[in-house]
Length: 415
Image 1 (tube, rainbow, N blue to C red):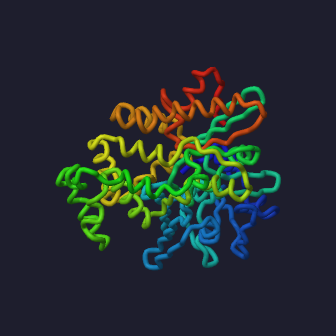
Image 2 (image 1 turned 90 degrees about the vertical axis):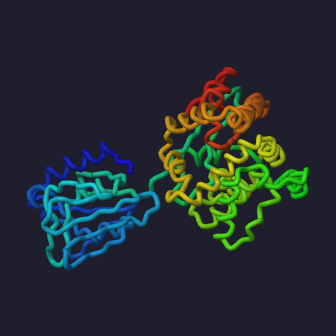
Image 3 (image 1 turned 90 degrees about the horizontal axis):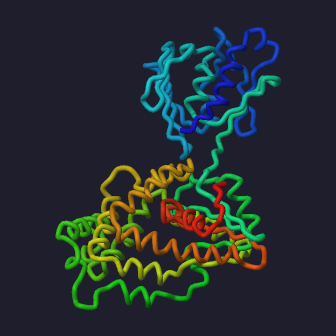
């Protein structure tokens, strides 16, 4: 959870100056996403210089589900906001609270007054991790629960032409949205959207797909992967009540894609929520021209040209998704929301070190072709703006688009 430290410090300082007289003369008001929290007869109080608020009223406004255990006198609050996985536990008359099972000392222990549980406001704001603003003159606190994703965006300019490059996550969940204003403003001012593949402009490629996903020499999936890998595939298909030989006739790379789709049916992370799909949908609504930097055939040929070793590793990666507890792309989602460029760069470096064949085909070679097309955008004679959305991993590292464009003499600025 991201803490807005400077604002928290301001809040703490402001609350430390509060006195009973001040509270009486001008009651504290708390606003969540522009709407004032109505405490009714259970207004915030000040005790020993600490402002306390009715915990249920505030936390429910902050999208927490509240549970009260009368016997143990314990309050448990669990966030229902997909961006905030906080769980808060408080006990009446105990000065130790727990946030995600970690102890936190309170300035004043929770207490019951007028049948409402009061808790230090400072603790609640800090524990929820939301952005806050303190207005001293109005004695008002403003809490913003809408945290915009930072993402990865760069800007390049030349001779009146502008290119915004946004690194995408192809599968996402609702927690990725909304996107920050700078990203949306860049899209709104653009004359073209460029993505990896413009599916709307492509014809029917089903015959092409059928021609490359199977072996022509009479061999099947089990002939190209280990017995253990094949058994995993059979187990997964059986668990989903599908014929155990459903994928026998396809190559490992295609079996990998099929298993990914099967698992994603039960996941909160969907391709239709992906960042690139989001902007393609917006472009369709606004009739913004879309440019494909690649084609479906080129990407499928890349998979098809992988060695048996790489294809089996792809398949094993898909299989692993069925056996690990955490969602495989959850860390990528968090990285994108925070805009953690260090993590993105480390991923690019690790991919390069771990498998040269995969890295060259998946990133290095494709990046060269993408950079050439972006270079052409910048050298166009119409003074236009392009919004380019490709996988985030294409941006970082020594062979990433940022580096390749810098090597062509451009100044690439992260926005």
